[in-house]
Image (tube, rainbow, N blue to C red; front, side):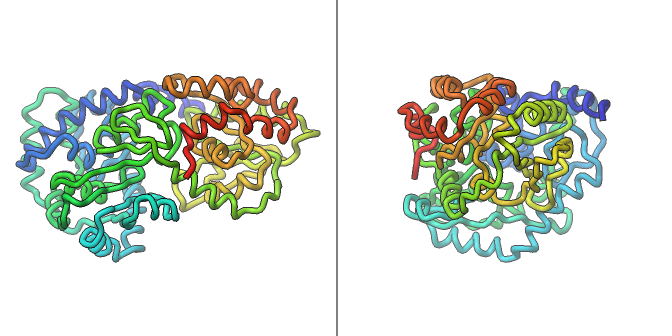
Length: 460
């Protein structure tokens, strides 16, 4: 395990962080190259915006694996879809990555037909926005399902030949690999998918989406934008507006006609809007009884080999130094990366019998309602915002070393109030000293707290 951790740390050090200006710059350089390459392969003249929407997953995968692609030319068959990993995946890993999409295809066999019908009949097309009354009232339209196509046959082999001939013209190893490893969905199968999408009154269409959807739905958006439609992205989680190097905000804003935030404004096309995701959380939270079965919920980000030691250390400190006369029963929640199997094993380092380890598959609103207080092992975090939206007591470790100018005053306020801490020693000391109900009751009445909610968690 120690050797594996060291290897993981070395690789992570070679890859630009997810929230970094370096990753943004690298991604932009890659997409600028891909635009010309893809237009040549398909003999078209589609825009930067078109290819950036369609190929966002591949750009992300290229950045994550650039340290391998730039060293030597790969002699591997291209994948069907891009796989985001810091390593070259094995055949088994490729199969396992593809399996969820195949399962989803057969679980919803009529999805494509429903999409085409909605495209024909609706002008406001929603993708992944919460199905709540406020969304229906403010936006109207209909959510189209996510569609996961299958790929029979071999596609257009002459497109791959053209791509490989293009690659031969480059001397740069990374660029040669980038072209030769273009996933089949962008080369052999691209025309069949693109041409089959019907276009109905594109000049009247507005696409409203929570984040960049999967490949097929992104292809629909890109095709309609090519014909005059508009695109509105909506903030769908934390970090937006809080971090200078927030890649998702940059990427979504760069291709959107409007980026609708939870209340803040940074870029020219940012539009202060409403926190629909948080409102959905509130509706679920209000349905749950306040049983206070746990003194606190320990809410973890993604625990991987590279950070396992850190999270074990701070967890040990918390459980060893928390006042066991005040706090006796806890629940630990791993971050779910899928909804198929339990994630409890990710927190197997917790050996304290006071702690129940959750699977990560149940309702976050429900276990939040069952806990007197939520401890965030990393802030920014979406659950931190969810707690504040419903005024549920929360506290956590601040790890944002590149805060935006608009969030800095609020971080200072939350630090002074004992909500945000730079280390777990300070966090545990605060919990041991305060009466949670009195402390929190006074905090939520503060004008600065209410101002933060209006700018970063605007209520529906």
